Length: 250
Image (cartoon, helix red, strand yellow):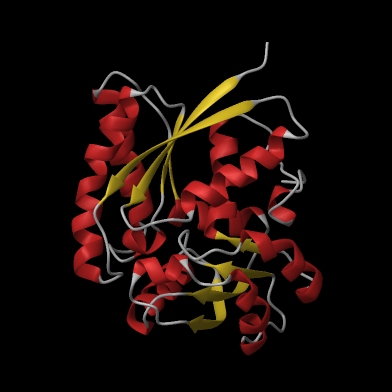
């Protein structure tokens, strides 16, 4: 019998990318492996990528976790990296534990993956000691992301802040632009390039091409989130797209 998994996604109300890129990774996986997946979302209000809205949105994530556990999902993914990282060092562990307890209290325990925690985990799985990062955020929020990654023991050699405050505009950013943007970064002696430290900024369609050009593993928040969801489900973490992390070697 083919196993069917339900994937819950806690999504900012203005996010238009998580519900396309993450399912795309899993659909590509379905072409080579037997498991099947359905996707179910609950949304938190957020329009501008500023600290005040991110904090209010994060408080709303508990409701989303309970709603999705009503559907008896097998794993929950929280889709806003900067909302987690702006709440303080190591906060992804606090969020994952709190949201898991929400599902337990609703009688439908499910593991929780945050895109922030997944990015850190993905970089460590690849053995990354030094990275360069592309962010769509304003510079102060980008610096919070850089500090958060470094607090987890990974050096950020260089970063680009695209300074796009409107979350809808982040979702409209052409991923092909990343093929030029990465050239502004110092990628010398880095282990991994983070092409998008944001699940809203599209990048999946160019991850494999970037890897060929840069010659090292390239990840994004959505690739890392997909990877960790597969791990949490006990599935082989592999797909035909999404670069080295999803090659099956990890």
